[in-house]
Amino acid sequence: MSPHPALQCPRDGADLIVERMHGIEVDHCALCNGRWLDHHELDDLEATKADEDVRRGTIRYAERDSDLDCPVCGDRMAAFNYRAYDLELDTCRDEHGFWLDAGEEGRVRDIIDERVRGLKRSASAEVAWGNFLDGLGGRGGDGAWGSVRRFFGGRR
Ligand SMILES: [Zn+2]
Ligand SMILES: [Zn+2]
Image (cartoon, rainbow, N blue to C red; front, side, top):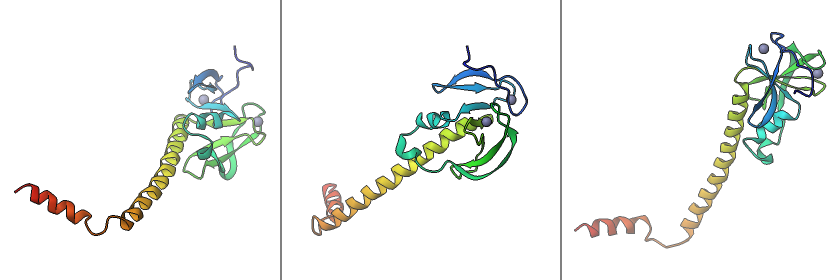
């Protein structure tokens, strides 16, 4: 049983049904396929993809009035750009939770993937640059040219 009476979908008023998504208990609307996440569950969703380093930072950018009401308290929610990406989510200003329209939970996970890749890329660029500098320092003049000469020499 759900710990609370069914919430209503802020888009169409249908009863939300509790389901498990990536191990998180969310309230799902079968009509519009939107999902309601309790306030801490957005972080839980991000945590399915990345550790704390990646999840640091501001989540709510360009906050403005939403056209949806919070399914818990009925107050008008705030719409915002998730982590400054072109993804609009809605949240209750009293921290009751987040509303994700159909497919937006997938976009949240994609964005976190992108951030992980970005961090790895900058880390590996630093390593490559370090190796390049080491290469300049060692081995004298017999680097690439020596390999080329040996290669052609060996084919005779
Ligand atoms: Zn709905
Ligand atoms: Zn609320």
